[in-house]
Length: 229
Image 1 (spheres, helix red, strand yellow):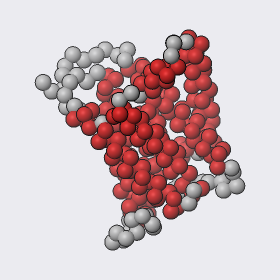
Image 2 (cartoon, rainbow, N blue to C red):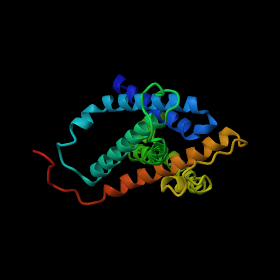
Image 3 (cartoon, rainbow, N blue to C red):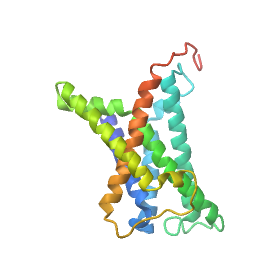
């Protein structure tokens, strides 16, 4: 595996881990949350540096339905991350407390919750669009292709997605996504591992959706027009 690919995988894995920690917010403490968020933003910048070739080709080549889906999801993730960072600066009490910013905290809290949860969903969906690449790398590590292994992976995906629907409802995530409430509820008596397992399942749900959405759009007619010559 090429060093650049190893770098991409490392950065993406790091972002996934930090994303899960960020969703715990009050359970890990405000100070830790802010520093992890800053680290997440740094990794996000590195992610775009490592993928600058893809960004540079946005206005070139044919836009197939799959490429449209991939590009739209990437843009939405970027906007969610940008909103999360801007709002984080507005409401920061630790990392960015030195900045001469006054006011805007109420708006910042609302924007931060909105962008954080949509960012979680969109990043998971975006990961799902690229899931074939991950499965391909795992397949190479496992050696000879196996229908049984492929079948077990599909069954596991369905089970994770099914539990993810339950966790999505149980954790009231839809309410946070659509601002039906202004506050996120955390059960401080619950073992942290249960929180992470539920959110990991929700992530798995949207990875599942992204993966099969990517598969579905490949069957759509491909335009012969080019975005730019």
